[in-house]
Image 1 (cartoon, rainbow, N blue to C red):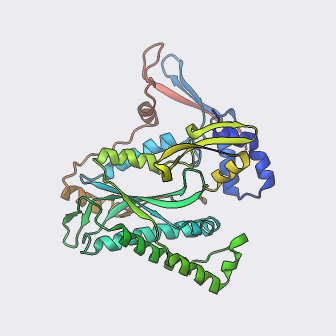
Image 2 (tube, rainbow, N blue to C red; image 1 turned 180 degrees about the horizontal axis):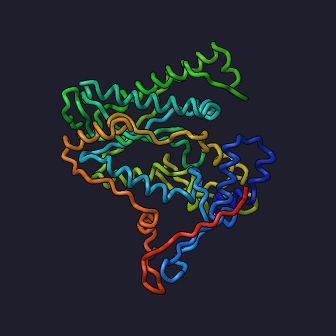
Image 3 (tube, rainbow, N blue to C red; image 1 turned 90 degrees about the vertical axis):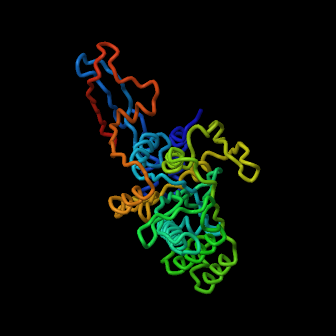
Length: 376
């Protein structure tokens, strides 16, 4: 079974020689290539009493785009988010931009992705406050994904939305069982806000998009987007808060493709499996050249320090210690103290076979020895 790391090791250098890549992408490729190899050093957990080596492994690169480095980060993030869950139903809403905008989004990633977040947050919050739909202020989490199953560019935002909010009188208002805002209303509001902010943005265009530098051409381009129906859909509500946590974990720290979806790498070709949603989520196999696979993977490397997970409303950082506490009280959510698990405890949750006691003396006291290599 091949991995992204194997593909980068075999073909990454040749790809870099043929393409001029920005520093953040070069760094991601370098990190993924060296992840969990001797180049990054190693760490060992040693029994404090008898000196027996309990666990040994090479250091991870910790790059957020690396398929190997997300499990521990995901578990740590989930543990932190459990404190924010309410005793209400939750909805999963997805906002997507038309594929004719994909090239514009790729050439202006930071600007367009920020516009997406802003348009989504304002759409949900403004419609929720309207008494016609809910008449209350929301709190929700938004997560940016930029890929489709075939690794092509497909920017969209997943939102996990509690089924209710706080009204102007400080009371909790429960939503209807189905999502409280019609998807057509969401779609058109989102479209209007996105295109309004896009028109104001300082965008750059290259290649086939150069004609959009002309104001008339750009206005015509926006007009064509206004005439389209944009895709917004809402999935069925979650059964309970545990399902919300698991779902969040599945989406938050996902990368463009996991190693288990890669089937083979041979004769300069890479095969991987993907779901074809147009045919009832049927699994299919796609084979592309190694360089094309690398190109598709690198499309989804985000700009440096770009936040792909954002919280809004009473879940925002400014409101977590005030409004969220009120929401818990109003929804009869049990107040559970935040417990910070150690790295060893998180690993124990993930790896069933992980043993904390020393096999020689039975002691559970351990110390970590970390060795770094100078591999710059």
